[in-house]
Image (cartoon, rainbow, N blue to C red; front, side, top):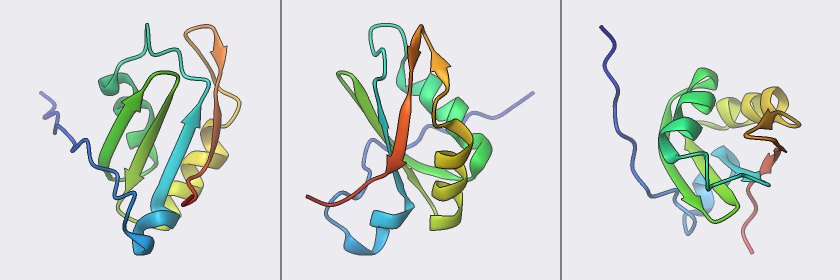
Length: 93
């Protein structure tokens, strides 16, 4: 039996200390891919503390920068629901 922990929808976009532990996922087919799918895929790189899914993109907030870097390296270019994802570290605008 596995325990699924629901993550927050908050990805700390206004916290400059957490910007380096946040990942942007672009070209996401949100008609087919749900928040739980994103959490499952990205949780293998470390503790996901927040995940927000929007039309065509998502943000994943990790507990630390090392996990975010591993996710970008491991998942960039992955094909999911027929679309090639583009991951990058999130940057404040």
